[in-house]
Length: 219
Image (cartoon, rainbow, N blue to C red; front, side, top):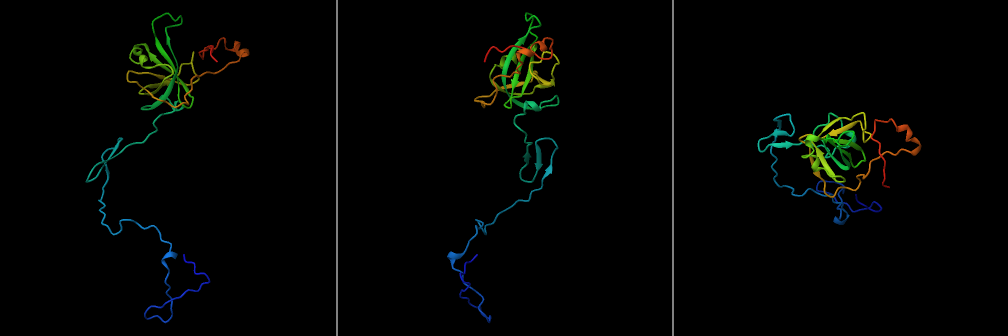
């Protein structure tokens, strides 16, 4: 753009022209765009022919110079709310809210399994169970109040009796389950998971065998 004021500016004519139609624009009045650097330099762009070597992740694309690998990008941690029995190769990040041993109805028999209440950053809780056969190998890895990255576990429907949390699914540790402690975890993990019942509704839960009922002595 050029500001010519009143529209009057001296014009010149080129050789062979009858009327002056050319104007000379001062350098300081020009708006110069950003130009491409390295102009006029030779740039070699190789011809690439890409073909699928296989259909499994990661994809390997064949080319003349070097093979190219394309990896599937997935979310790092799966929310607990999205777990289901078909969940495979998922990783969750959870805090251990509670941990206790189950030794039968009288609590004086042999160890049957270790129970855990886990919660993720969104506050969704889930019950986890470590079988007695894995208690030494896996149970000793888990400490209450710590945050872990868990993977290679099994998701199954939760039992319909004495459930510690309101969740339709539960986690079962396997021989291949891995637990990695998270150092300096985010602060949004809950410390407690509970569902309050008022005193006037306590009698309504006398025969309630669906959920595990307890009393909180800490405020």
